[in-house]
Amino acid sequence: MRTPFVAGNWKMNLDGARAAALVESIRSAATKTTAVEVGVFPPYPYLADVVRRCEGSSVRVGAQNCHAQNSGAFTGEVAAPMVKDVGATHVILGHSERRQFCGEDDAQVRAKLAAALAHGLVPIVCIGETLAERQAQRTLDVIRRQLDGALAGFSAAQLAPLVIAYEPVWAIGTGMNATPAQAVEVHRFIRASCAERFGAAFAAALRIQYGGSVKPENAAELLSEDEIDGALVGGASLDPRSFLSIVQAATV
Ligand code: PGA
Image 1: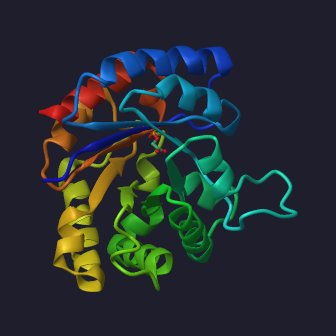
Image 2: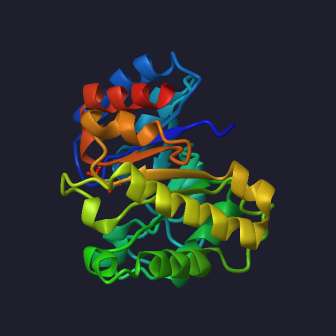
Image 3: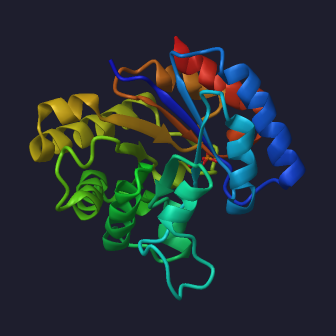
């Protein structure tokens, strides 16, 4: 059985005081359940404080990105060992906003994945098609290309900690979520592709989150699908009540 993983991607929101208040509410409620893994992904400046506030709890803390190199002349970037050094355990890679606004491509996602795995961070690799790609019926081609690009050259053993987030770009921040049937079709395809490449046992254990306008109103129907192993939540993760109600939906 795969334990569902509900992760809050705070993106470039909040300030120190609001980040602290948010994590305190999540921490006290989320520690009561072991049926769901809960994680938060604050902006870099608040990462160390959020890690400290989650010590002794089951809440996972991660960064929203990392660089592929360990150190060097990369002004404005943050390396995987730095993320690890402040006590974070997870990292989101290849989010569509980074692909769209920062020009990240599959090769970069692959290089970042290598860095994250080398430093013992649990990677959440995000993949998903744009609206134009879905309308042109290219969804599964895009997913295959993104998977091939990000995962090429790794062994199943190396990728054991991997989490994949299927996030259709047209569903992110738009209020328009994928239907459970749309999400399940892509999740099955991801699992089958990973089975081909890394074997049936790897694919059976792989957690695939759905992301894109997950909110309390649609969480139950999405998360009750066996194929959907949790959620990567943006907007609704900024409000503790919404986020915890999504966590609750993953426990049933
Ligand atoms: P959203 O964002 O829940 O606000 O659509 C999801 C994400 O970008 O991970």
